[in-house]
Length: 117
Image (cartoon, rainbow, N blue to C red; front, side):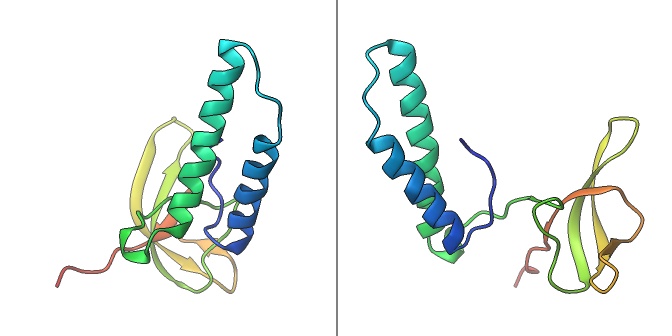
């Protein structure tokens, strides 16, 4: 399962619906079928636990630009993969008005962490 989604109510409802659908399936009588079901349910449980964990315990995650872009202009941590196949992580500026990243082929992003106190 482990498909990254936004951590909001919609994602929670989707994971809940998947769990309910899997609970209503007949239990397979083969080892492979049981193992597949167990791995799928493990992913659903992991998603539900991540959604319900307190904000201070949540780990930052990379957000694909195909999923969503930042909601305001500013600096973000970005991941870019270039034609040579190399992946680079750097801080980049995002312009909300034009939906444009400065100087990169950004594929993923995340907010910058807070500065140490």
